[in-house]
Image (cartoon, rainbow, N blue to C red; front, side, top):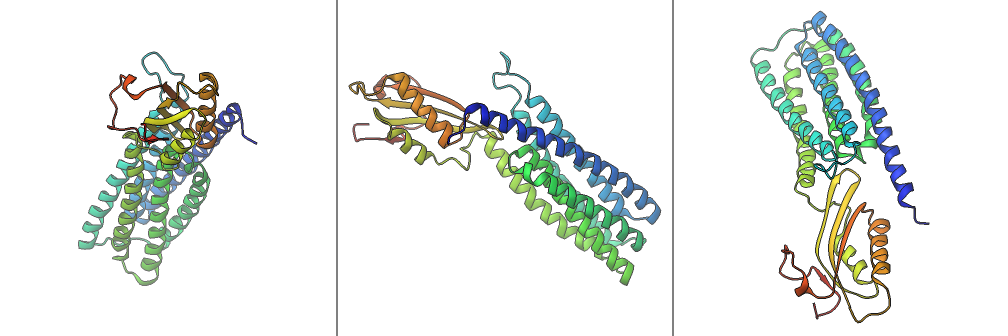
Length: 317
């Protein structure tokens, strides 16, 4: 059974509220552990813990940014901002992606300095605090993982947490090596590995964010199949000037020009539009749909992005 627009809207709102709750809990856990790392770093004389505390601070900032963006995204559209503030979530994800790059570069530079002069630290305390941090980051990552699938904004915060989880693993491993073998070079070596992993995560997030900002077609939308479905409707001769893009996570838009047969007396224009909208909404989960009906290509006054129709039902087009 197809769901109604109201049911889908309520489900989307429920997901957003769940994401807010999880982000709020994650923020409390991260800031609490950050304080523990600062205290532990000072007592152990560990630059690794203090550096990781700085990383936790950026995690907290990224989650706070995600929460602020989600709050403003719920504001109603205005005459100046007809789409509202939905794009703030995408911009927040972009900021988080760029911040991850900055963190990875900072880790590389810091690791380079430690290769030259590895500081002596209390391995036991580093291991203990790092183990607690690992548990905290695993809990936070598990909380945000599901929400990250529905929101690129939450995914930005999630990638920060994953980067810090990897950092906690490095802290634990370096704590073991320092405590058991007195091998202080373990810290910069593992830091370089973590820095590379963070770069990879940041690059994936940046690609997704830039794709949305360039108004690329969402990955889950097959334009050819969408046009096939439209052309399969009685009275439709072809489809052209098709644009599908993401306004915000879970909010995709469609505009298209639909060529209809003026001699076809099967469906009225309202019935035809209703059927096309139903296909776009129910089969392709498009939320913002704008369709223009035309009887001949020469009658279209708009500047097209292509010289020929994207999809036609016959050679006439």
